Image (cartoon, rainbow, N blue to C red; front, side, top):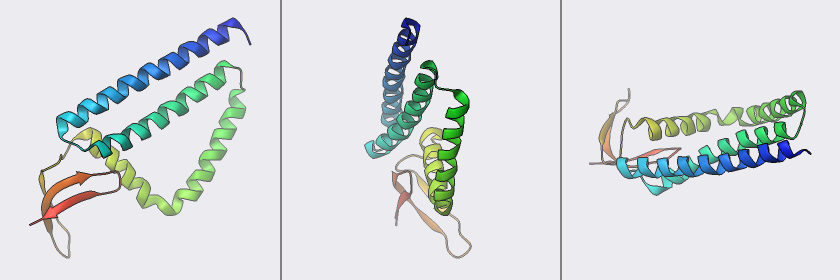
Length: 140
């Protein structure tokens, strides 16, 4: 381990914590401006922080000389196992994805009135909560 690796690792760790603080502050601002619940922000923070941690772990491993081809095989194997394991849970994954899109896109917010048009029956209500898995409507 050389001094350059230690400096690069220190910079990467510092950058991770700085980005983590900046992202968490921005999520808090978004939640305050759009009248979202703290539960929503906690879920978004966890998802983004997990992604950020994964990226910086890979960066640290590459700094300390882990062979990139071995790392790619390991990550590919883990993602393949997760993909097969979660294949039956595809609807849950799509709900999580749509929840994140709704959170950042701001197409709707709390206390908006929306209508869901279904071929069997229509539902209209006021949004009382938006989570990663669901949107809670209060109907009249």
